[in-house]
Image 1 (cartoon, rainbow, N blue to C red):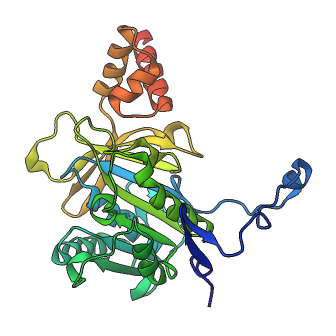
Image 2: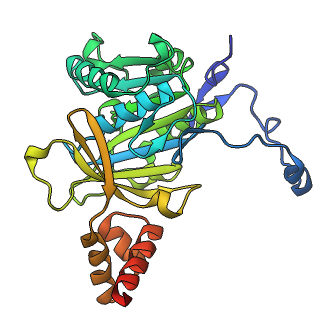
Image 3: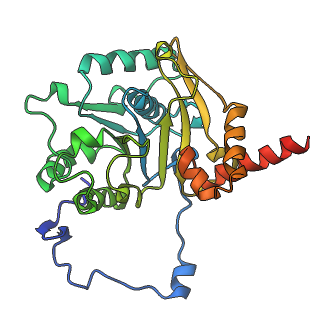
Length: 317
């Protein structure tokens, strides 16, 4: 049986350290050897933003649709299907860890996803769920060494682990302190080294950005923000703007924000309305920098650049 990355570890003051690690496990490679090394081409879990051995995070205010998003991604990856504008090249094993939702609500949502999907998982255990609602003592705190060790046997059988959500699952420390995130960061990087991908669901703060320390984003390959469209009404249900605030490895139209809407069990997407282009143009007219525009609108610098280009093109037309 494959050994997990925790199998030969001991606790140190900084987290988990391999037994016998004292320098002999550290090997510096010359530039020539490094450039000649044959690395396998990168694989994707969900193209273009969730790579194999990738770390991703999705954040949004309460009630926007984070769990809808998480379940849609999980089902697409498990079946080799699609979600919104993204395609999974082949089925992968998924572990969904939910620390908040009632089990009956998760069941209803997954049943609706399965009923509207164009394919089924290769087997019933392709998606496995660990729901706090079904655990007599709750789910262990994943920001502690003991909690991570207890979860590891379940994670060993998965290719993608979805954590919904960090606030309910990682309960130790101060959410606003960078140092409190260190045990989680160390663990997630260990999952990557073990060949796992992870998707963390997180809350947005009052200002609209991800809540707590920004260090949480540092090691992520992809960070996605879900937000309400300006014309949203509460009667609509799940409708949100999908914006990439960090997109390592892909640029251009694939990283542009778009609107997603769930209607009768079916997801549809469309381009952002022209008012987003006008908004970027209005900010630029005041002398605001592109970086500040990106922060204000909650999108990436590349997206700001493309919005401003479209604004200039429309002004010349």
